[in-house]
Length: 360
Image (cartoon, rainbow, N blue to C red; front, top):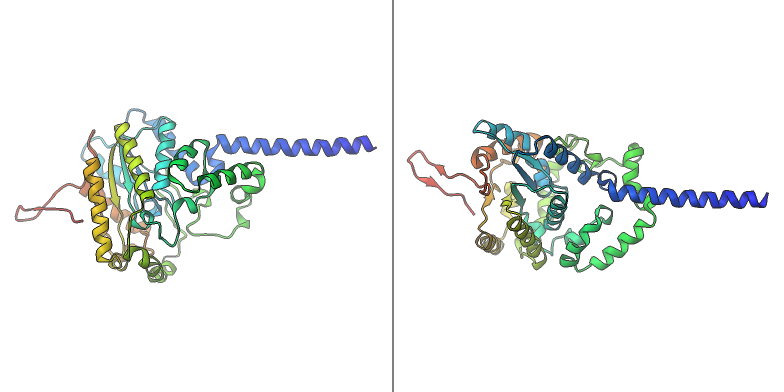
């Protein structure tokens, strides 16, 4: 009897360890399970590349502003009328800044996906380390990280050693440390609904555009002023950090190395949000962007004043209708991407024949 009990206990321990090892292996080789937002986008992009292996590819990297605001299907439909259109994919992420833009580009290149064009969002709030949200590495969820990410983090994060220890510790108990993701898969009703949550990206289309259908627009419109006030201190005293600059420059260095034509993008903002940039902040931002454009011969696509306030669900994010209108205008103003040339806005010509320059 005692031997049988001992065997049962040992068997249970072995089974538990085996299940832990199985789940850890699944997380390592199946990004869809470890990080649903990234995994869903990767599956869709790899499917697109497999279906059109010879078609040129344009990828957008950015935050929730681009994730909700840039519609590849609208761009491709508009550009197809001017000739053979490239495939366009939105590989943005909620809360993304330059660190994850860099990590994502490294990951795509490691998987053999080399875009012909890259559009990289610049969001000033993520360039300044004094943001209320903190530095991007301070907000990172280590469950999202891959083994290949650590060399990048070692170069750009002052806390990479602490993050690595946390990542190793959580890998010892994957069932527990990844319980929130597992609940999304197997018990979605148990969690509290978040209109900006991933929800396994159920509203993600095949080209990476995320439609936040369940977002209560009126609620977020009421909160827009509160959000603007929250950003005011940072944007009024904007100072780009060496950390963010290093991450952006590594993105552009990778583009240069792999012959990817890159562009920088400023997404639309509400009137109230644009009004809180201080004069000194505007000068610093303009000087910083100017240096990037000179150092890398890279165009800047500034759409910050393109969308009326009624097209926003809050101070940051375009509604589904706003995304449609913005993407239509973007496609028209930029024109289809041309091989070997970075995407840029076409010059406008006024009725009197005078060329109209873009601002910033």
